[in-house]
Length: 111
Length: 406
Image 1 (cartoon, each protein chain N blue to C red):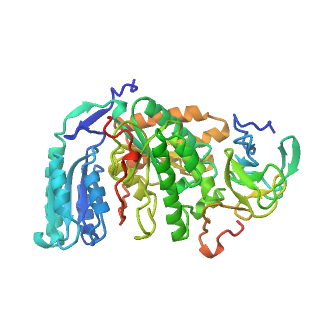
Image 2 (image 1 turned 90 degrees about the vertical axis):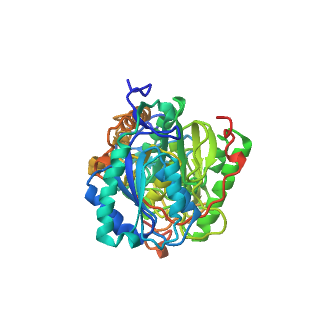
Image 3 (image 1 turned 30 degrees about the vertical axis):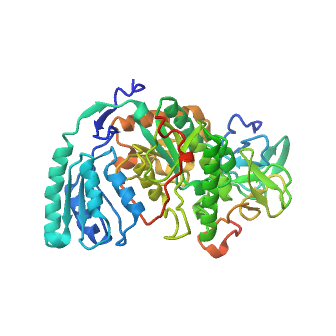
């Protein structure tokens, strides 16, 4: 995989770093579970499949850590994560408003 | 070259504005008149004869203001009002405003005309007369600087904020450089962006108004229990309201923000405007905008000739009155729904185009549609329209620093 850079986009199947301050990467092409991904020079095995537009952890994250995208905060971790882990509503919550699912009772449930 | 606007042959309106379409609106003033109005439009079998309306029987000053702005929009050449007869809508005020705008207008009251079939027949004849008069509108050249363009995102996903939205931002920057007026909206979808947005305001007082508007949106949605975040947003990889917001925010480009407007306010000078769509006062009437077309109608009421609509999951909607150009953020969605998408911004993720190139493509598509080319949603017959109850207070003077300067 090419080196990640904020100024250009990674190839299909790759992950995109939008800002040097970000602690997550954006998937720009669906990647299967078990795929080897290079994150900041280290090889990481993806524990789950990641779809286009979804996020993975760039660094080890702890509950309470702010998550940054575009260099700006998009919420707070509610659980820990290792590099390559899927970052979504099961471990990331808004600092403003709850998100809702099709069944509002499942709000915040794992995808 | 379209650059100077030489190819935009517009319709001159009496208020000085120019239209890029010459639509005939058939307006039902209560749901009880909907069927009759729809039958008149269906019989006309003409994409420029369009149906809009207001379903409620109780009067609402926001709805009257919106409908007045829409019926006198520069893209509208004439109007037929269809009233049941007993509803609360102030049809006289609406009709007088349309007459004052110099447009042909007729009115049918179903209870006086003698029921369904007679009103449909009378309406069909009226539409023919109105259209014949509207066809006489003077045609004039329209420079880019007189264009008003709005943007909205719908069905956003994790790609929206890295492809289609920043590409629309590039297009907005070009339009504003050319002297045009642009607007973005939904302060509830800008929660988390209030401080960076306030820093772009042309005065500190306007910046404070923007922060207040976003705080109002947050309080409103908190009371309702949900933010403007749909299940499909999460399916597409967005996790939080502020993540969605930051992606949506990039549609605004980099120009300074010249003012904060509310639905139906016409920007007083060219530049970039933020529309506050969240009602004022206590929470009432339910969700501020029940779906994307409510916001599209509000931007059109504020004068938009064209709407740039970005989508990741794949929205198909268009609008009555003003053409909607669809910019698809997600290359997988584009592969499935290419017939609905005017621009494939997902190419950026496949390294087939840069943000600047897609921005340029959106700019070119905007000018082509302004010059008369139908957008895909327009060609496919999409003419969605929603108008519901709301309540607003007028904006204060610090929201529009350029008012009076233009």
